[in-house]
Image 1 (spheres, rainbow, N blue to C red):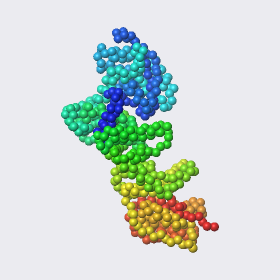
Image 2: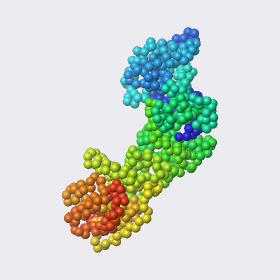
Image 3: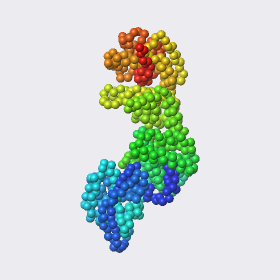
Image 4: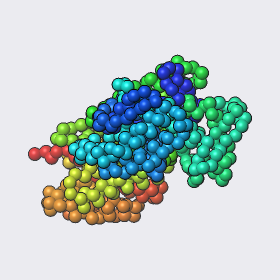
Length: 618
């Protein structure tokens, strides 16, 4: 991830927000992305500077909107589990005793320790402390009463802070220089001190600007990719004092990085099929500020609309943002970081890092290739949901479903255009099919039909072939059997030949056509057994779809034998000819396919077999 791009976003924010102060970089939103409320302990200070009095007045409640930056006035900054939060502002939980005890024993001590005795602000907080202790039981009782009446949402989105009325004017914590100083010290100290160890250097090259800077910090990385105590994304943590060598950042660059980081976390972060990610844009011409402004505005609008839609529980496409990027010209590129965040430490574990991806690659992945896949009429009215036929359309949910915990590995290959192993692809497909098969046998309720999984798998193979991610055979010679007009059977030869012609990327060899046809034949046998026995005992021969060349050959010969016992020898003669020419005569080539690939083509024929069955004539 390029820190220079993060700093550029921060600098843009500085220019945009003229009223921004340094303290605002370190003040945090207590519940980012959510509407929340805060309970304010109100203290009234009156009198002259030499004769001040403080009186506790009660509790006010204020609401904070998710899209409002008014949270800054409460001056919240997360602290440690032992020492409490940095200022008096904290998250409220039940029972309330613990939070009040921390404020009394720790927070007041921290605030009153750093300013000299003559400070007027210090005197204010001394008076507030005395009033707080005097009214502690009353405060505790009132907070507990309020908390008990909160609904489930309010109980986890409520904060606690102070509001101070001085000579009939209301002030919040951010209005006090004393509080600002504490927050700034807390925010900047972490740039060069970690667990008591200081990492600083003089006149070294900064990793952000690439030029020599006077003061260099060792723990100022905008995103904490690792802990200096443990191995992580950055290597070499043997001497924490020398940590600046891993990540040298100058003191004057930390503000831009901090502001850039906050903007990215608030506005350029989302979820892609269950995986959290952030986007860091940078224009092709690094100094083009107008291009940077354009792309940031574009992305922020897209992410904000997504968050708003999710909040309103509207159904939106998971890859909507990617499709918006795909429509842009190549005047910028993107770093995309998929990550997991430790909510306690703020450290993030990078699951996948994609760098300098152009909009044209998004166009190939999310528009051009899916459009080609979706044109196949096999996917028209292919699935039925709530008794309504619907088209099956390609999306990355299919990739997620088939590859499961290897999803990001596959996403990486797709963005970079690297090859995938066919064995890996078919192993993933068959693992899902076998799981659905077992679920159908053992679980109650709805289980996604294997027929749908087969269609999605064909979609996936087509998508990967279009992108040249897997290899397939474009040239093979399938001889279409001639239609026997005298012998009309329930096998629809015309439709089968048409299907092969329309799906050359899927059925890309004669052997695969033959295996597919064996699956069709077994489907016909299932239909015969269902009609005569009301069940399909031949299904036991399929070993849960764990097939190999020898077993598949046995399945074919035994299926043929069963069919002939129910009907005459010439039943499905045209289908048998296809199998003979493309499967039996090429059986010596079966070992060229993996068992998973062989199993998939058989299951595909089994599931799509009804496509090639014509209604019986009277």
